[in-house]
Amino acid sequence: MDKRKKTKKIAVSLIAAVLIVTMTTSAAYAQSSIPGKIDVSVSSKYAIAVDLTHNKTIYSKNSTKKMRPASIIKVMTALLVLENTEDMDSTITVNKADVNKFKGTGEDPFGLIAGEKASVSDILYVAMYKSDAVACYTLARSVSGSVSSFTAKMNAKARELGMKSTSFGDPSGIDMKNTYTTTSDFAKLMKYAVKNKEFMKIFQGKKYTYGATNKSTKSKTVANAAIALRGGSSLIDGGKLGCTRLAKKTIVATATISGTQYLFVGAYAKTTSKNSYPNISDANRVFNKIKSIVSK
Image (cartoon, rainbow, N blue to C red; front, side, top):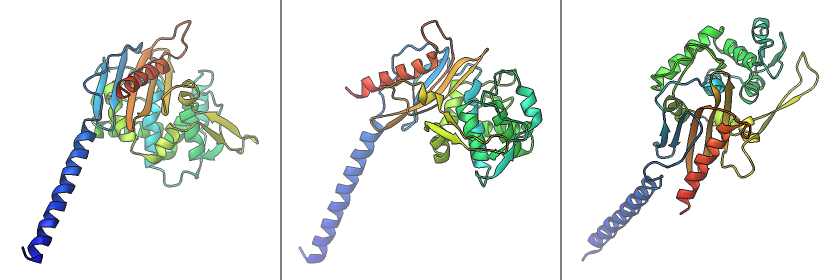
């Protein structure tokens, strides 16, 4: 065999070897998800669990039925703010009408003051970590000029993502007749959201320091409730909680188990005398079940 033919034969053999390794690796990767559906019981009336890495639903309970999302709606609010703001350090002002609208409702736990000036980033963390409705309305005005225009943008994004059973009535998630979604639809939103690094930084964050403003000389620390309340042995690595009178407790949470990213969305979990956060318990139960399966 001359030198040319020998070199060609070696090259062909190397290519074949690489292809075999690649195909074997791809097959192993494709099969690394949970086989079939998991068997687990949750208190949430509406729920879904998804293997985000392999785009596979592994648990479903009334996932296509409409439910009230409460504050997990702020995932969409946060995404649109991040996508439509050039400078997150730019200053925005709290509107008096928004402060008055939510005064005494319990929907403004942070206590933003009319005329208060803060960065978009500061206000966004207040919206996500304190579930503050005034913060959401302030952000909406900064992006679209009005709350109604921003809400229209939210619904347009929902349609773009294929969320066919979803309607947003405002950016905060308060109980409204025209605010509803499904856990299946919300999973579509989260599949999109996890690709945004800035969003995930907030979603998976623990705490944030809100600096001094023209209305307050002291800085304040806000904590991500989903992380703070998850429990010491929890697998939850990111999340947003929600709660209203009609929605009950809601949650969207993620966990990375054996290199695979999982999602849980739950809604209408009722509190009991023994459990103030059944939504978190549901997420923990689902992720622990997944771990027990993949660890075998």
